[in-house]
Length: 259
Image (cartoon, rainbow, N blue to C red; front, side):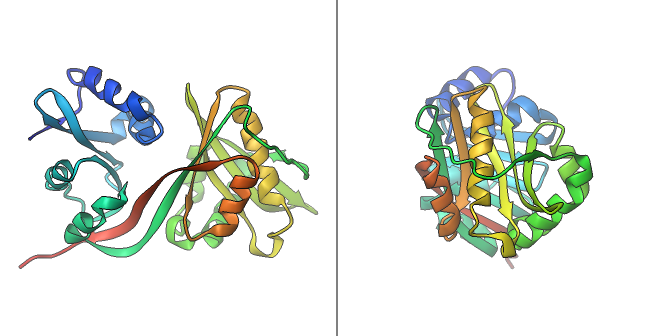
């Protein structure tokens, strides 16, 4: 098996492979198109065919896809000391042989196709601006300290340049937020969170439904990722029409030290 870096030479077989299941390879396509300067993709080749691939983004996050042999070979080229990593569930043990888990979850990818949505927008939605970034970051950190505990105001401001952010305010207080990024084919709901004391009031349902409405004005597929141990969020997404597509192993880990 040969491991090569993705370049213009290999782009034809890369896109042919990715487009066979664009949802499964969403971030490979997204980051290669829009964030190439911060992205490295390695291909595991058997002859002229792709047997697996690895995405490394900003030297912090990695995703792996492919056969067991491909994952083994690709992992030999992953040298990050700490990493936030996503891969198919069957490769969990292989990953844990190299990285000690700081936390891990099952991550569910859900999908919704246009004309299958059941929109319930029962609360006024407002567009969020850069001036809301600090409050957005605070809501995210408290909603999911593991994944969002280190998010910064600057990161939110940067995200707003390519993403649409909306929220619900109660007596001037921002209580629920959501954001989405559109590509040519897919709308990805990147964030949905509500302050704990304001949950179970339908705010998240309204936020997600409104984002779906925005997405389907431009494209015909929406996706969202959710932790499998977050049943309340899954119920919200199912309520508006999302259905399960794939489940992944998702972790933050540090490289094991071998003597």
